[in-house]
Amino acid sequence: MKGDLILYNIGTLVTSKELQRESIGDMENIEILHNAYLAVSKGKVLALGQGEVPKSIVGEETLLVDAHKKVVTPGIIDSHTHLVHYGSRENELPLKIKGVPYLGILKKGGGILSTVRDTRKATEEQLFQKAYDVLNRMLAFGVTTVESKSGYGLNLETELKQLRTNKKLNENHPIDVISTFLGAHAVPEEYKDDPKGYVNEVIRMLPIIKESNLAEFCDIFCEDSVFNVEESRHILKEAKKCAFKLKIHADEIVSLGGAELAGELSAISAEHLMAISDKGIKELCKNNVIANILPGTSFNLGKDYAPVRKMIDKGITVAISTDYNPGSCPCENIQLAMNIASAQIKMTPIEIFKSVTINAAKAVGRQDTIGSLEVGKLADFVVFNVENLNYIFYNFGINHVEDVYKQGEKVISKGKINFS
Image 1 (cartoon, helix red, strand yellow):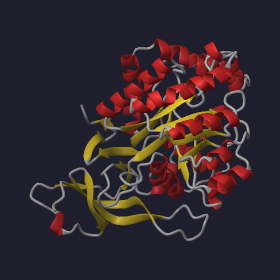
Image 2: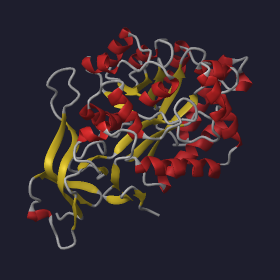
Image 3: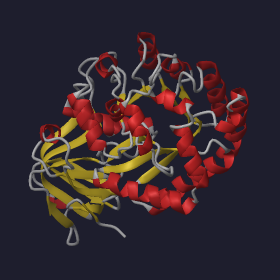
Image 4: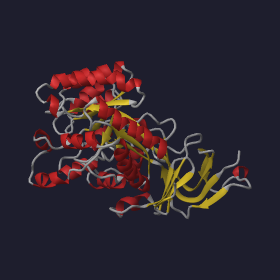
């Protein structure tokens, strides 16, 4: 078979193909090739290797592209976002600067509840256009797949509206959008005197959401003053009965036991984990739950970072995401989240790239098709305008992406949108 497209003269090709671990705490076990080539046919990886491109895969119509010794990686996967919402919350910035805590703002009717009010009023077209523009910026940063949570409706009508918007985005934008139902994001104002009633309402929504085929995962904000462990267990068990895969916002602010619950229920991932306990780490490890770390949120809130080095040392699979949302992390720049992980959490460049490629693919259940550049997988990849991985983290705060390819089609060219 001949390649439709072949990149050659690649200085560093991060395939993210997992290799055997040297030790339990080894998270640099991915394949990296130098002086490499990457061949694509019909949107999938046809071949890759080092040295000269085999003549057998070069045809008369093959497009040959010189990578000029640059770095090429799999497309980045942002596996935790709150993409679809309306409005913004810059009015809360003075409160945050004065030290009003996140949960304190929520109790005053701000935070998530403020965005709920705006999102309920918005039309689907408004939600679509706002999120579409964000996806364009994410794509320019090298993101080719995004997980998008609902959770700013807190009623069936608006949750469905958010999830329908996810579906429309997935159908109309190069980035693949994977949907998560997060109806248990907060207790809405109309249920403030009856939080148990809202738990029952979320449970009522579950089969309706599932039957609509609009969400693959179910998530919950298991946190102090939001949903406690018992309520979270009840909702997630019902979600499991409806065949949802499980995610948990766990131990973000208070060590409540969310990580332990993630282990108990065999969730695919536990997210945030800034306040995780040693027992929680043990349960994630024992039950193969992915730790999805959101360093931009810690940075923006001025909070402690998740104990990532401890988790890696125990053999936990770690992913990194932006947590793009209108409150705790209004930032769609995955490279900034990666930079923070380097500077503040002391993760190595290879660990970080593993966290946003193959590990992130596992966090959204797509490791068989994306997350690494291997023969037969989708040809989602990024060309960075740098000569080595270290430079991406050394020269921080800028966008290092030159080109982005989605299933072999160039959708970002020299940093600019290249699709219609």
